Amino acid sequence: MSPRDSPEPVGRNDTPAPWARYVAIGDSFTEGIGDPEPRVPGGFRGWADRVAEVLAERRDDLAYANLAIRGRLLQQILDEQVEPALALTPDLVTISAGGNDIIRPGTDPDEVAGRLEAGVARLRSGGATVVMFNGPDIGRTPVLGLLRGKVAIYNENLRTIAARHGVVVADMWSLRELVDPRMWAPDRLHFSPVGHQTIARMVLDTLGVAHGLEPFAADPLPPQTWRRARVEDLDWAREYFAPWVLRRLRGTSSGDGITPKRPEPGRVRPEG
Image 1: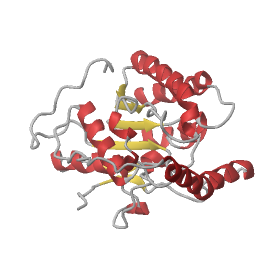
Image 2: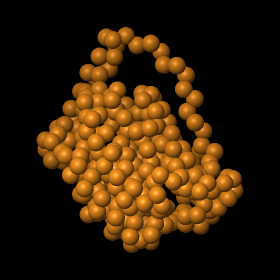
Image 3: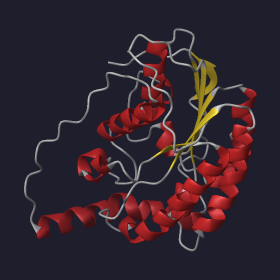
């Protein structure tokens, strides 16, 4: 499937979806960090679970697996998740990978994209529809906003890969709603429940699947003084950014000891 061509619309909400086995791979973004829900496996829901729930409403026999683990770098995703995903014989695969590499100092977005392409080609070899995510526009994000140009270069590489291998692009960069701070979790590294819902809507729209997920009705943000904003930035740096840097220096990961929340394809049910 060419990424330039939108998938054929599935149609009404009662029209069966064309996919029976959906496997999601990646890092914390796909695991659903930032969207806590104690009733689901792993304790986090996220956009992928939300997409699977909609697909399950359209197809009773949908089986869904999620192999994503927080903190995983690209090579770990390629080495640990691609072949297990293919072993589950999916007809729909989503992959978001490389973001943790891109935000690290000294990484080359061209080199990272080159390694990702091998994994994408392998996923496509099974004949599944593959959806690949590019990075969001982080230009307004404190500290990470300095990496905006690097993310843009990586995204252009991903578009080339998608065109070469017939992959569908879930375009995070163009999802302008994500500039709203309410789309982000307090750590400013992961998405809030509202953000995950917005991303799930975008994925389903990209796949041409009709859905009833509610859009975010944004009330205007209250005005904020420069001083208050700087205090919040300092609080964030102390509570979230400094521990992240410390883990990098120690060579540890938030995903150490974590296993996939949905290692085998199974039925899903909508969450209230």
